[in-house]
Length: 341
Image 1 (spheres, helix red, strand yellow):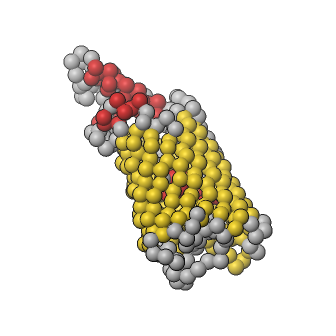
Image 2 (cartoon, helix red, strand yellow):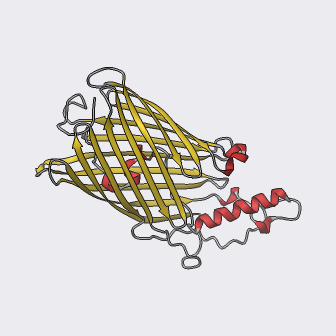
Image 3 (cartoon, helix red, strand yellow):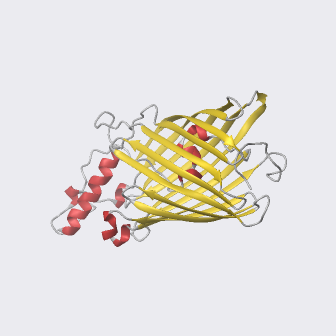
């Protein structure tokens, strides 16, 4: 009976996921996946002209079907000599996720564009937009349904009689955002923004059109962060992030830090940080930066009621980030008012 209840519950969760009362894919290192947080982050990098990033997340690895998420992204600043104190940011994102027994697979590709304008020497306003295709598919042959229960076990040869019409759904998705940055001086800047994801509220379902409410709810992201140079050896970056989609909410607060290991120029840095996701997890992180290459690793230590279940206690992420400056691939200097070694 316990086995039947578990399998029926899993099936119910799959179907309610199809009805979209859930949170979007996300990374704990959201600051290292900036284009997924807000399109206005595209091309916003005070120290560099371009960035390329990779993110990998493995959640609940101790289960038989861990949740795996991967992202590759890049952005660049263009036309800085065409606009007075302004520039355009362009970028692209690929996001892939595989979850659950039925291998529910999400593949998302976006193209981003943003415009950044310095209002004066200290204030910057940014507007961004992204659009792309989303595809989701599921393998029904790996799932069992209540009508396949014969009293002793699930017989996969029995028709499931579910109203599925496809195992592959796709749609066009649109997102937009706005950011503001205050460059107070060479040792401090403050940045914050708001974005609206799924602006066009697309339909996402494996059922027949109009047979269920398949409207994808809009998701709202809010973030604020700062960069503070404490000394010639330490820079701190406090963060706060809030996301809401339908009834799902996520709040993360914490900080990242950089410790200079190599003197002037900071070519070698130790990276560290601690974050807390409200009612869910404590998230310590550690990393290393050498020149323009940065590696970060974090571990999500579950502190919610899931700690009672050993298979659901943890997740971990790895991010790789490469930054550069045109012409010298990052070896030169940019004339920006932001904390740096």
